[in-house]
View 1 (cartoon, rainbow, N blue to C red):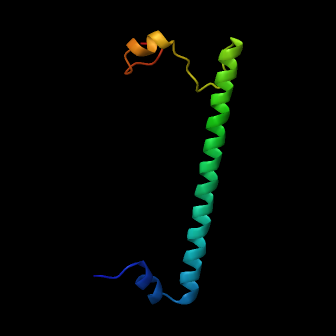
View 2: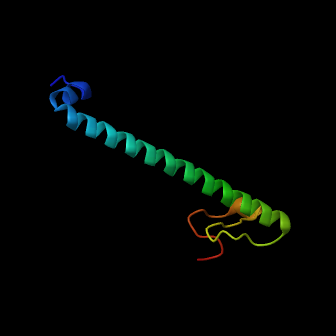
View 3: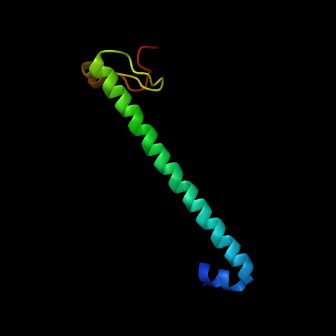
Length: 84
């Protein structure tokens, strides 16, 4: 079996190939938008943590854990910070 994607698409009726192509483009667009959203959210969380540390308050992001630099270099990474 030496066929590829192009040969497989040529065997389909034109309207099925067109529908699959449109579906693939929609999926690609949604994945691209999802990546952009993830980058924006991650950047916002990092800015929130940086601003909170600079102001001396705890960050708003519930998923952010601040580790002391000295503790981070000697801690056991298999355990959660501050817990057993």
